[in-house]
Image 1 (tube, rainbow, N blue to C red):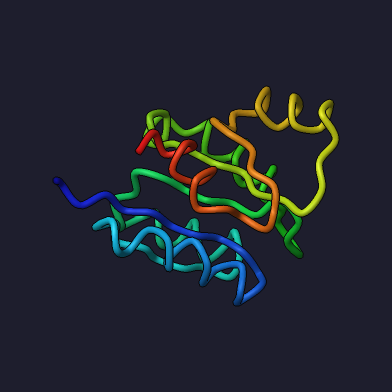
Image 2 (image 1 turned 90 degrees about the horizontal axis):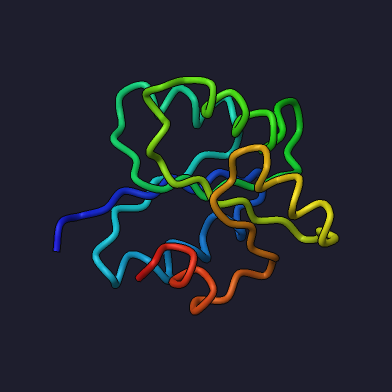
Length: 119
């Protein structure tokens, strides 16, 4: 299996830790960022197959970062998965319309994450 790279972006330490606990044993390389700004910097020189992106973050939201990445052809094929503590069905539709491939609700469950990654 080729190593797949995931960047987890969340301003909460625990929320960054959990996806890595699920993914590293499956052979994923997991990088963590505590802000959208840090993720943008990392994406300049890190290959990323999947971006797991918190929606509610200070300064630059996950939605803003997704829109910015989708406007850049370099990230057109990158899978971007939103995860949020709360989202009504219409909000989920709005996130998917903005460019997210999938929306997961916190707390993330391993089987939902695996489905979102097509594992």
